[in-house]
Amino acid sequence: MHFATLYTIIALHLVTQTATMRISTLNCRGLRHDHKINALHQHIQKHNIDILLLQETHIDSLQIGNEIAQKLDGKIIWSLTTPRGKGAALYINNKLNAEIHHFQTDFLGRYITATVTINACTMQITNIYAPNDLRERKNFFKDLYPLLATSHPQILAGDFNCIANSALDKIGGNPETGKVGHAELSAATPAPQHDERYMA
Image (cartoon, rainbow, N blue to C red; front, side, top):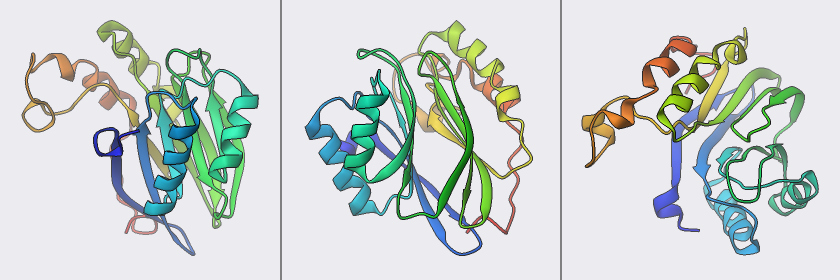
């Protein structure tokens, strides 16, 4: 697993009442082989990752998922899929004092949303893996709105398969293709709120 090309860290430090958390997201392009699991474990330890949102896991059974969770020393919620595509996961490091109240996943391995209390702070964490197909992507984002309705602080991350600014976020190809779905994503998500209780 080449983290130099696949790994994107979110520059976000969420400050709870007692601690700061380090959150990241990664399209892992499959997590069914030991060398990838071991590399991911080393990566979590090296970068002191507290919460990790994974896309394209290719995990199709909870048995396999539970074995991976033990190797990674964390709690993992899986959105299961086929061994050859899709799949998402929400990893929470065991070192956190975390309580998962409830969660929701789809049947295509495209999203996970969970309400979690960590260090006395309750929040909603949503991980999405948007479709490559342009029409499917637009419809996927349109359907997100009720999923994201919450009164809690919210973390939304993942592989959106679209960009907001072609000049900043894309090199080569059709400059407009990558933006398809961004308008629908923006409409589905609330305007960013900067709450000094939670942001560093």
